Image 1 (tube, rainbow, N blue to C red):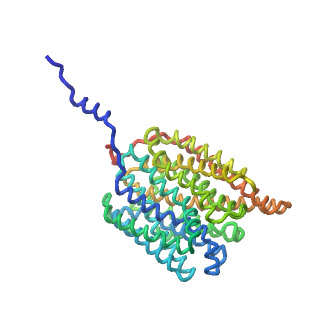
Image 2: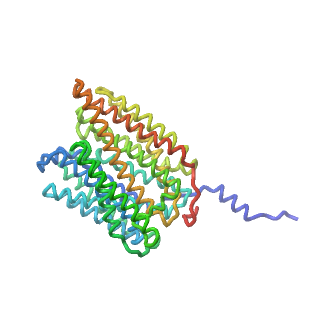
Image 3: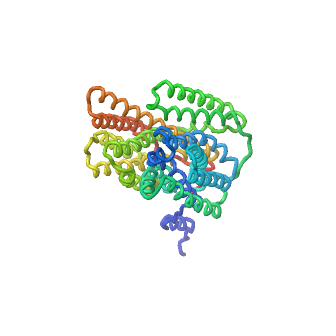
Length: 488
């Protein structure tokens, strides 16, 4: 008599042996493309400052406002998106974000005065602020836990690579025409991405209706906006004015936090702070904040050194830093695949240690360091940051229940903007203070500048030690909360 066949076990065995074909959902691909386009504009005006000073007869400090106002608007608007994304459909949020961004881009390209150009940047940033949390929330909703690392790696291309590529792209465009060419080049891309997205995008999740706390909106906009604005003034007007503005921002943020805690007892809060009760999310938030302080601060230092001391043009500077941005973006999906296999800690710990070591190495840059060495260190730094950011975004949000995805994404975006502003202000203060001291004791202008730069990179490395410490506390993986997308 033949032995019975266990067809159930055989089917499971064959399924395990069959390679699983995994594709990134179309909705995520479309959102990644759109997010890359809009976030690129956060740093794209950095190299255009000299042209704007000539065309509009404004000071360098005024021209820098085109980048500062973008960051301020992002910091003020992103806290609202956690509430917004739970109450409108995916298509509605996408349409609102891309339409707003495209209108701002068109207005910027045609701006007859500096004031209108500044207003156009506010409109652009308003659309950008919605795209970042929308992408993260949608990804966490539609992608199964075992595939999130690979897909989040593609998000790294948009959220980390795009700001790094902004100065490089603008440097190339400015070589061929006026600053208006930056917006003229971006506008058709934004329109095409918008149209394709609206044709293919499907709604994810069900919106729910609840009242909005306008007091929370005012406190969030005033608090985060004032805090980032105060930080942007550090080093430009002495200490008294920035300290007052930063203090006002802190007070308003504290009032915003108390208001959200009160709202959590009844009506839905604007930004649900119950996300912070989840240990891995909170640790990821601290780690990401320290990482972005070091990342964005050092992003500012290198172009200053290359242009102000070494005399490179905007185009030459852009081309030198472009390989690092490309390396970071292209490695993101590969790092994500590795994360899906081995988890977060084996990537974050060596990546963060490498980041600290490279920032310390960059603190030894002097007046005649070979460009090949600078290029190599910058590319290596971007590689280590890709090893850190992709797993941290993934494991942090994976610790949350689906009901908190939108609020977690908004909090991540807010902290990213604020920590970038803190890091930039802190490293500029360190550089200026050290440079001034060296100049006072008789050093040449070049030696004083390099001395300040070295201390600033070293300060970035010290901040990076926090990333190492948090990385050691992270688990390799987290169990998917109840209600999260199941595996394939």
